Image (cartoon, rainbow, N blue to C red; front, side):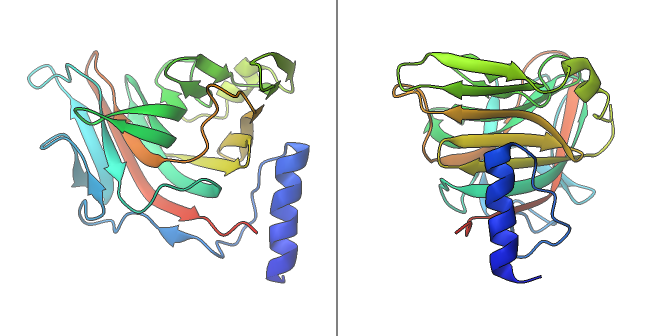
Length: 229
């Protein structure tokens, strides 16, 4: 298939609200070498590579008392498609994008959310607004913050596509004011976010470690495509 056809199809899927699931990986570049944390920066001792995956863990002996993030140092992309696998056992985590760095390896911005529970996986979160758009919803947010929202699939049905305590495929598509999140080939949520105060245009990508009960989160096969035009 010609590159022009692939790009056109990807743009159309964003417009009509269907996740891009093209079988090829043309244009994607790796974000993680599978061996060490080269190209990433985080809290000393807070992240490591285990079984070929970026890993963080909270245990009764070494609990996570404050959330922290592992920053990707490969750029601050605006428009991109990012794909990765994650496995979460207990707790909550997420992938920040179009985000800002804050002290003590904190962040602010959009988050592709995930949790061991049943509410937040596949939702788009932001620190000030909370749930920008929840699972199963498609929203348009105007410059003044007003929103129109429709349900394209029941949240409980989409939750069934998530594999608990196993590896899942996550995809983030960010293009202009549009963000689409998909897990295991299922579109989870979508938003056209034009909010003049809160919409995020570009910024860092980062992985989250969340405080609370014992948990373990792992990420692998992280890759990104920034040439969408």
